[in-house]
Image (cartoon, rainbow, N blue to C red):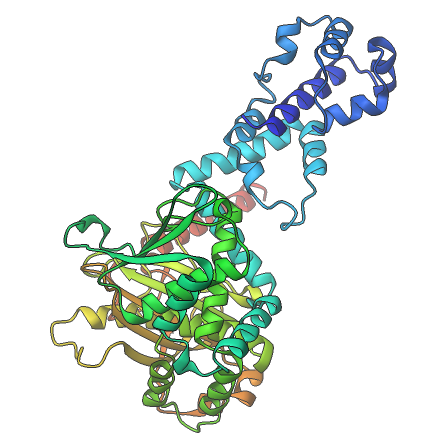
Length: 503
């Protein structure tokens, strides 16, 4: 266990013993011979006393020395002990979330029963939904992105400086070979490929990172999936360049894909920073702003025009849409944005694998795994379309736009969706969608939002919670909605019965 966690546990035990005796810090100071300020620092988990001072406290409380130094907490504090032992408090970026760690320890000490019950509830929820620590890391990262409108000026400046030095913002010169040269010549990289024919279980792994040699002669080795597309390789290489230019060290970065293991939030955040830099290199800020201005000035939605933008940058659909979420709030004043990525899990089985909501409009949003997402949303509809035998896959990705009128919130969104096979991952399709609220602000800035030819669909979150009658896309009955209505009817009838009995 980490030293800081041992300090916290000892401090909690000391605070509890003092409270059980109803002693102030001053009173414990007189009985133990330790200063009140020193005792306060012990209770806050800042200091761990030496053996002779623990003995003095043991004598003051008339508690055996071994019991004082034991890491076992009382029944009341046991849930806090479990939480501390997981190490999650050390991994979570408490300051980024607005928490002062010392104040959190104070909070735990002053109300152990309430705080213990709270954290026990969180742990139980995470167990029931099979949520690992990685879930919390990525949830915090999303909050960090949303709070900053997904735009980070320091990373943009670094990318622009690199482009000015190496390529004069010419997309053509930011190719795979140029980035390879920089990594190999300037940062002593060795770049190679691995064969998924020999290692079939690695088909979905795009890349991994290892080091070889000793401290004085260490070499970084980047292994790329031999079946990865050119645009996948370009992104992996520019992200790797981001790790180098941001001076992110060996222990502060992922070596394996984060979906396999995310050791800490710091590593998750650093991976995002390096990825943001890579994205800003491949899709330069000023060029995309210019292209979006041209797109938004069109009187009618033009799928082919949007496809030309995608082809121009030679990146994945996901990368282009995410880059749009970086720039649209800052440079176009369009902040009510969402981004969704759906993945197929067998025929007609879809999972939301990534989401981002700016302006905290969390609809549509992630739901329990057993529920079925509305098939009228653009992302799920395109996946359904891609699965059909008659689907025209001659020009991928599929690109469509639609207005989605959200039944629950009465909001209408405009969305752009793209779907394609998730190569090199076998037997899997993926769709991505960017959308924004249609209101006076967006209509004034995007001319094609008045295009009457764009299809309009009424949508909901899941089939189980949807009351849309005669839905042609429904895959499950509205069981959760029926349950909700049944509870409401019971509540109404109980109220009516109570009123009758009181007459």
